[in-house]
Image (cartoon, rainbow, N blue to C red; front, side, top):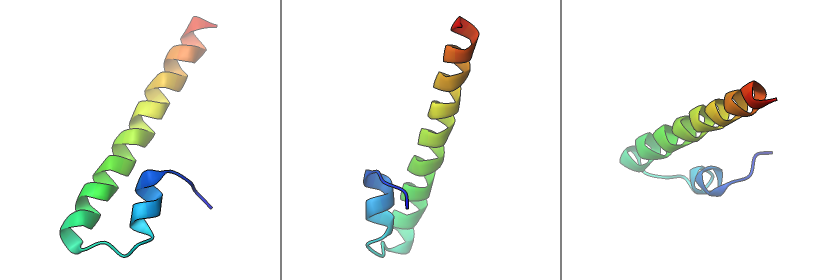
Length: 44
């Protein structure tokens, strides 16, 4: 089970236009997390 506001909204059965935005938000947050993790790895 995943947590987070985006995933909570996705569980509510959003409309098609909302679904596109929520999926874009989820992907952007995953990308940002990867960047942050890469920066932390480099700083070690």
